[in-house]
Length: 568
Ligand code: ATP
Ligand code: MG
Image 1 (cartoon, rainbow, N blue to C red):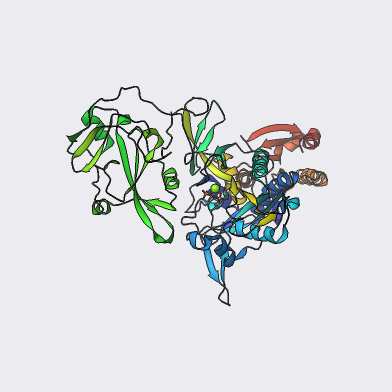
Image 2 (image 1 turned 120 degrees about the vertical axis):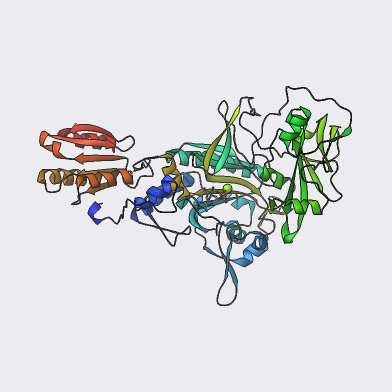
């Protein structure tokens, strides 16, 4: 490609809404263009090229292990989503609309229903299983806060795959195969990433894993162990059970006057007791289907923090929201003095697992200015769940080393679905005994357009993008410093032709512009390597540039072609 022919509107101006490097450079480098500033983007030629390269890596690795690509209709009849029950359940992120005949439709935010529909019409027997079908297509989610450019768009490109099996064992085999395949994909793209246990909602366990691209700007907090391989999203992280070096404050059960001690800190100071022996009682309103809601008290040790996603899963709610002091008072709870043992009738209490054998505990009495001491929770008949947010320094449940936090960008997600969709949608097959069974499913996503942002978050400097080998818009850029210098132009054209002939994806910058402007564009666009043909050509020298670190090697004209042939 010749730069003079390329539509690449680079600019020095940073878009107002952009804070992340990837957002800034993808816009400034003319890769993408915002449409109306609300999570919608046009891909310009360079952006489309990178997208296609990433897409090709994804496709190649998937096809190698027997996945088959299809392309599903983007506009989805709502009837399918009504069958699965998601038409009502899915929140405002789902774009619903009607056609001229008043039929309901949606724009797919994910395509489980569509894929199950395809398979239920075509697969009848166990002999046709297993099957792994995927597409690399548009998704639409009416995100409440689209931001960070391609990182969280409303319309975005996703690879979404779905596998169908005759048994759970076979689905687990495919799940592991997808984990291996995803690792290959992210490695080929030159990314530093970590596979972590993810929140699997009601399924629990290791039913779901996320692929996190490590970057300080990531929206997800992940908990990692540096000693072993353990990694988990904060929403799913577990730790080795925590003890306390300070001895338990022994006391017989009694009520204490504790004015103005509404926080764990105040209570700890008042009794001179480690927060480990205090009960933290957190009230939340749990929201369920059909506008149903209830107040729930979550009780955990005062030294721990509540993890809201875990808490939400513990009561099987759609969401947990905060409650005002007025609302608490209305149902008979005393803010600052709530306790799990004295909750008013009808208020649900869930205890954290670490409370199971808690003894000599101090908790609220649900009476203004009073706490109860000497509480034992040993053998209590109650609901227990894992409610704790793992903290940095807590110990790894696998190897006992300290855990730490890091930030990640969720680039992929694999999920053991089971029969959650095949059952309501009636996707069954006849097993070896001729008996109809629901297909067991797995689902596997990659944020293909988000990956462009993730690659740049991990690979940039203060001048612009540094694309990785397999994601780069071009393999090589040849920069002719001064197009009025005939010798420079002749060499540039010659190298360009020979590289094209070899099948190298090469960009020749033969524009009239000043040399400085051309180099600025080179740095901004981030092609991994360049040959700069400048003044030193008179001495028989050109420069071979590596974008990462802007390393410059002087190479003699006689050797440059050989060097390029070796490199590419
Ligand atoms: P997030 O937690 O970031 O909102 P998600 O868990 O809702 O993502 P999934 O349903 O798991 O997303 O979708 C599969 C993949 O699609 C994600 O791993 C992510 O890479 C990508 N993705 C999801 N939402 C967006 C978005 N709004 N813009 C770009 N990519 C997205
Ligand atoms: Mg996800």
